[in-house]
Image (cartoon, rainbow, N blue to C red):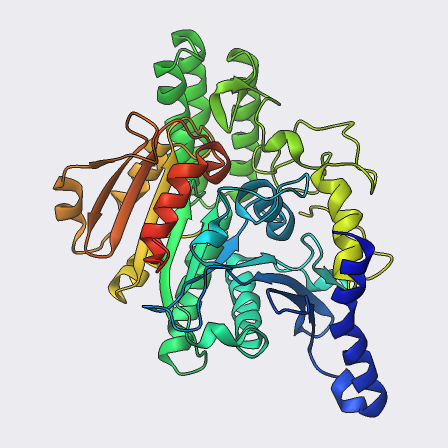
Amino acid sequence: MDMSYYQLALLPLLLLLLLCLVSLHACSAASITAGTPDGSELWGYVEIRPKAHLFWWYYKSPQRTSTPTKPWPTILWLQGGPGASGVGLGNFLEMGPLDVNLKPRNSTWLQKADLIFVDNPVGTGYSYVEDNSLFVTSDWEQAADATTLLKALVDEVPTLRSSPLFLVAESYGGKYAATLGVSVARAARAGELNVTLGSVALGDSWISPEDFTLAYTPLLLAVSRLDDNAGDEADKKAETVKKQIAAGQWAAAQTSWEVLLGFIATKSGNVDVYNFLLDSGMDPVAANTPAGSSQSSSPAMRYSTYLQGQDSSPDSNTIDGIMNGVIKQKLKIIPSDFTWGEQSDSVYNALIDELLSYGVNVTVYNGQVDVICSTDGAEAWVQKLKWDGLKTFLSLPRQPLYCGDSQGTKAFVRSYKNLHFYWILGAGHFVPADQPCIALSMISSITQSPAS
């Protein structure tokens, strides 16, 4: 990534500016796109509403051929938070082509599919609004914005017209994926969006707050991070959250949930909510994210909780450093006075049921040692689905999965028709980073990649 590379990357933007001089109409377009000279990367802004700008970054897989044996897949990654940057975190910390040190990642998902990262919703990462009243206030609003983005990307990324689209999410991104999946399916069925929705995959996803909250105590008791005395009190606090959710007291439930997490931290030796084998601050993904932001909706759901004092200068090899330094220089189109960072409603099972009823493949995958979005909680909300195949699905045995030359079981999977559940052993909240080999194998199965 030397300066000559940046100069080459600037060429598409210079051509666009030249076009603007010739035609004022070209400058009034709702999107701006740049990329590498060979077309292997594209990035840009789409003005999804007046003065509201979503940033996206597309990578073309080097394994893609001009005449694949079957359609080559594209993955749209949806980060959690809410408000965490997919362009930064998912890209450089989990499964993009380069890691935070800008070195090639051996386990990149680009081996199996084209990748699109998006800073969603507006106000996240490189995305921005010109008026603070334009921030979204619900998951459905972000789904509408993201659908508008996809309508623009069909023209900006022509491969999307023939490439099945897979929405893959993590944490709160699962809510985005569920609502966006339904929005895309409806738009495609109505002829308003020319894409084929291949699958929706929900990784350690915050789908049902009630089920996850009720799972904290039994999970932490079972792994000796809480004792019975603390467990009794934690259960009472969890029941309070449940009652407030049932009564629609969302703000009170949020406050009570945070009180519960604070109590658990105190009584558990400060267990890491992303991995019960660790203490707070030890998770390798969290340890590379930027210093904390008080704007995120919850200290437990953001990626920057434990990182006060981390070097965030543009020259540092941290995610914050590279996004405001070398990456911003490469992209060229980020506003000069803009600083990358994080910025800070419920999804119902009916959304998943609707996707299943359309015949869309739905995959749930969960890390074994996650706490905040535990496997027990994920199993609980899946069991509440109204899908007519659920009873058969639950009755089937799991199949063990292995990976590469390593010995031992790495995961289990259960599948029936278009519902699939993966139990990822030894992984916490950040599955692609914690167990990259089996995560890559899983994504290959989900996308049915020709590179499988």
